[in-house]
Length: 250
Ligand SMILES: Nc1ncnc2c1ncn2[C@@H]1O[C@H](COP(=O)(O)OP(=O)(O)OP(=O)(O)O)[C@@H](O)[C@H]1O
Ligand SMILES: [Mg+2]
Image (cartoon, rainbow, N blue to C red; front, side, top):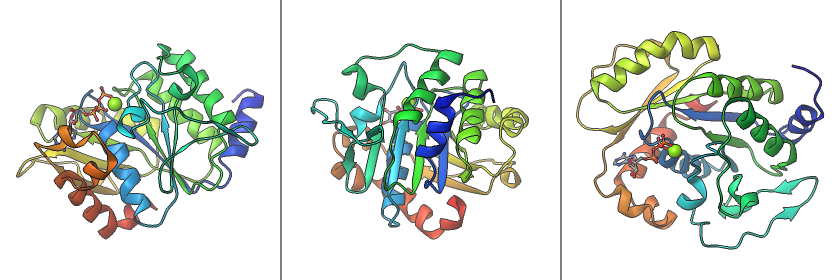
């Protein structure tokens, strides 16, 4: 990587973060953003302090899911900006905090530059692990993001690949595995979301672990608050699997 003061600053800001989990998917709408929020809650319940970063610049949704949309956010400055607490022990860094709710329709190199700038000024303070919500698809943009993260963070980096259990979706992940492995050599987690009954999975060996989150017909209506989300069937099942398989994340 070319010498860039933003890279040095991002490294400094991430120095005490133990692990980062980029949440990615081959197809859109599979539940990445919802799962990012649920994973932050489940990891928090393990006693970890969690940071969450929204890198879906043209379609950011985490501020909405964490209930920040209609709240005025006071940005604390201290060697950069300290992402606001959106729940006990969970901090959210999102470009929306600086754009007053507007979007940044940046793509490819521009979007990675915007993410690097955000990382360079984000003081994660007491955060142990960072979840990164990403835009849909696994293409150049996501490749650049993974490269950026490996350049600025030396701890555990474990992509969470999200899919639905439908044959076409699973086949897409299976077909993309070589490409995904070429982007990231280390271990990965697979989440089969909106799960109903059985799935025909033939790629167990490619993942450190596989989590299955059930289809929850009431999930959408529960996305109005974190308290509601914590009561959901989908969250209860994800939490159970995260807590019984902690090794998956470390
Ligand atoms: N386990 C589930 N059961 C039922 N509905 C779900 C489940 N998980 C997510 N959803 C619903 O799926 C929809 C898409 O979720 P979400 O926005 O999190 O997907 P995404 O992958 O982030 O989308 P995008 O690719 O556009 O960023 C939402 O309406 C959400 O409520
Ligand atoms: Mg999303």
